[in-house]
Figure 1 (tube, rainbow, N blue to C red):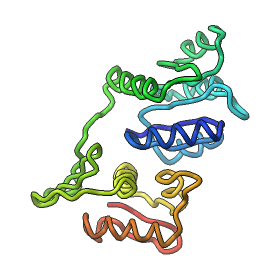
Figure 2 (spheres, rainbow, N blue to C red):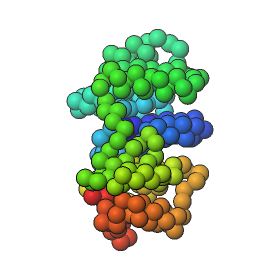
Figure 3 (cartoon, rainbow, N blue to C red):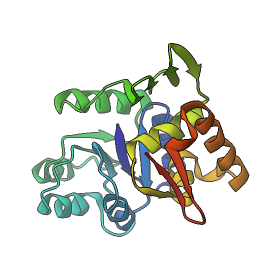
Length: 217
């Protein structure tokens, strides 16, 4: 499940990313400009927007996206207690909200509820080839009746490749969406993870485009 999170609080965004990336594929945006940049190259099953962010606020952003006929389910994060903000959010087409401060488990529950309401795909096992599949929840690859356990980063990297197949993915995009800002990997570390995946799923599945990035087929 691909989620686009917009939150300009550095501390809160790090906490949310650490937590949510254990269960979902989460792309991070600091502001509305970054949201538009991500939407130009990828589709998302769910938006999680803070209302009060730098630049265009979350409400105005959703109003703009809805004017483009973007109906992506949206959960708002807000510190506002004024019901006028919540009313406007629902009038614009938001589907749920959560007030700060909140427990991470509550946000997870609201995401799961949104998935059920909108019948968002919750398939745990993804077919990689006729004889190989990947379980996104267990971080396991099933290959020729053999179970291969993946590390968390290898699993997240494979999930990101699968969700963005057949297009060029830059090294910067991979590191920003799979690693946290304060733990960005070196080029050698990234290549090591790519090599591990190739050994498991086949070298032909991930093509290196020298100086630009990778393509998963």
